[in-house]
Image (tube, rainbow over all chains, first blue to last red; front, side, top):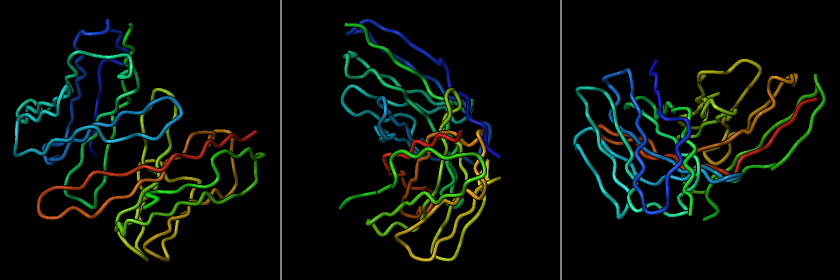
Length: 112
Length: 116
């Protein structure tokens, strides 16, 4: 099955700096890559996603890039704010009954 | 729409007890799934379903049963609870992917389960 690795496990940045979280996947058939944000004690919530037919997608301060050749994708958060502090999960899936494989998560701490 | 609703929110069990975690969605989603979340291990798929009457195993199915009699409901049963099943359980749903790509999953608030 698919294997998704996520790095780093923890990331601490100063408010206003950028944060980058990276994920790699093993199965070249994976073609849909969502990112979720989970605040303490809350449900994971989708923040951005990318499909394999595009290389980059942006939504305000958040962007995701995809390199299909290298089988990795990254989440970029610019101008970080304290409310960005949370655990972020990447996931990969292929068109096979919507099975998703998640990374182990990155705890982002934005210091004011 | 309420989205994905999970009950109970918290539960404490003794080893060997059985219980059912409830999950319901009102978005007419075909796909429903159960995950467990343990520290440092992300979300691991337990069981999933692509429609009423159809279920299949995920990565960590042992000790759990599921059934899907309606589109809306997807209960998860612990047959004989063990301390290793202490975890946070999330139910998620989505539309079945059309064409080449899947659809994003929507999660419930989770059930925090402790087994003594």
